[in-house]
Length: 217
Image 1 (cartoon, rainbow, N blue to C red):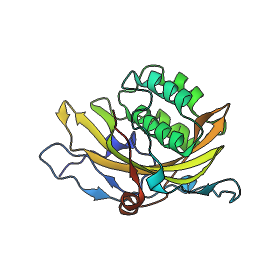
Image 2: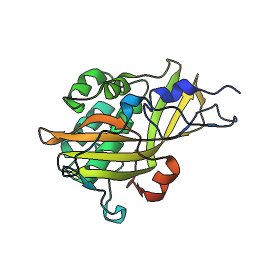
Image 3: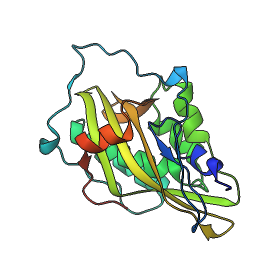
């Protein structure tokens, strides 16, 4: 059976578990890719980040920035997201939509200079720059997405996420895949910026502790 590993390369740089996308009518298989040592969770200062808030107390918009051109959406989301746990989670949802889209939005590289942290890791830079093959389209669907605040302070947050990856290959719809991972956000110049990618939990654990996004686009 032929499966399309390349589809999710642009969508997921770090995952706990990935369901590989296959053409409709074929089976989607589960894989557990190795995580690069460079993507290991960064050591945090206990005084700088508090434990995750109770998931029952946190809600986050799954379509912050709106269903508009994705460069506009991510810049708007960055401006709108407060430096709170909820704001970090909502900004993460739009980050996934922006980074996962293939073909990429025009001038994505220019927008990345505003979205990425000044000390963004090479892993993050490669994730943002990655693309699926030319015969493939991809997108992240947050309509059933979930999130969990791993840690939070007004200057740094780690947010785990689950979302669906959708797409086509040569015009044929692909079976949606589950993508998951975590992002590290830092506050710079009064807004959230993407600094690093990690893998905090496996999918089953994340499903158990996470909260659903409010809507999606």
